[in-house]
Amino acid sequence: MNSKAEVAKKNIVALAVFALFRGAGVSTFTTLFPLYMLELGYGMSGIGAIASLSTIPGIILLPIIGVLIDSVGRKPIAVLAGFTVVSSLFIPAFTGSYAMLLLAYTLYFFSFLAGQPSRSAMLADSVDEELGMAFAKTFMPFHAARAIVPFVAGYLAELYGYSPVFLVFSLLTTIGTLFFTFYSVEPQREKRKIDFKQEFKNAFTFEKCLLALYVFATIDRFAWQLWFPLLNAHLKEFGMSTSEVGILNSITSGVLSTSAYFSGSLIDRIGSLKGFVLSETLGIIAALLLSLTSNKIVAILPMVLIGFSFSLWIPAYNVAVATGSNQQQRGKAYSKMNTVRTAFSIPAPQVGGFLYDTTMSSAPFILSIVLMMINISILWHGRRKSEFG
Image (cartoon, rainbow, N blue to C red; front, side, top):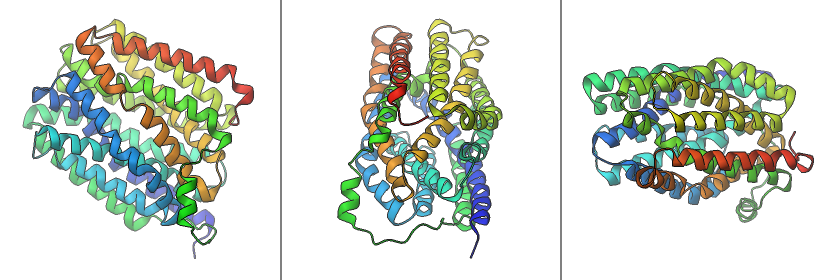
C-alpha cells in the first residue's frame, strides 16, 4: 500500500505529465478553432453562438458529474475528461459542419467542466500542505505547453491546413491521457455507504461558506466570456496571420507558466481574496488595452497581463474551493461552483459576438471592464463577511 507521501508524489507527477499533453491539445483547440471557423466563413456571432450553446449540455450533466467524482472516484472522471479533449480535436480534423463543430466545442467545454473538479479534488486529497504550490506544480506544464504549441500549431496550419494539425494533436493528447490512466493513483478516502438520493440532493445545495465565492466567480466568468472566446478571431480580424495569433497565445501561456510557481507561493501567503483582486485588476487593464488598440506590437502587453491574471486566478480559485469544502464533498463543491458560474455565463459569448458585429469591436471589452470593476468592489467591500481568506 502506498503511503500518503508516495501517493502525493506520484499523483503530482501524473497530473503534471497529463497537463503537458492536455496543454498541447487544449491550446491547439482554443487557438485554431475560432480561426478555422473564420476560414469556413462563419462570423463573430456564429463563433459566439457555438461558445454559448456548447455550455448547456455540460451544465445539465455537471451535478451528476460531481456526484460521480465523489462516489465512483476522481480518477475515472479525469480520464473521461481527457478523452473528450481528444474527441474535440478529432472532429474538426474531418468536418466543417456547423452541427459537428458545435459538438466538438461541447466536448471541449465538457472536458473543462468535468476535468477541473476531478483533477483538483484528486490533488487536494493527495496533498496535505502547501496546496497552492501543489496546484502550481501541476498546472505549470499545462501552460508551458501552451507557451509553445499555439505558435507551432498556427505555423503548421498555415503550411498544411487545419485538419492535419487537429489530428496530430488529438493523437498527442491521447498519449498523455493514457499515461495518466496507468500511472496515477486514486487517493484513499474514508469509506462510507453512498446514499445516491442524498448525494443528488447535496449536489443542488450550496455551501454557505462559499456563497461569496459563488457571486464573485459568476460575475467574473460572465465578464471574461464576453470577449475571451472571440479574442483570437478579434486579433485575426485586425490583420494578424494565424502564426502571429499563435505567438500572442504563446506569450500569454509563457507568462502564466513562468509565473505559476511564484503565484502559487504568493496565494499561500496572501490568501485567495487578495489574489482574486489582483487577478481581476490585471484583467481590467488587459481588456482596456485590447479595446483601444489593434497594433501587433502593442497587443503583446495585454496578452502578458492576461497570463499574469490567470496565473493568480488558478491557485486562488482552487485553494478557496478546497479549503471551503470537506473531503467527502469536494468533488461536488468544485462541480457546483463550475456549474453556477458557467450557467450564468451561457449567453455571454453570444452577447459579445452580437455587440461586436452590430455596434463596435470594443463594445464587449468595455462591458466586461464595467462588470469586473463592480465585481472587485463587491468582493473588497464584503471581505469581512467572506469565509475565504
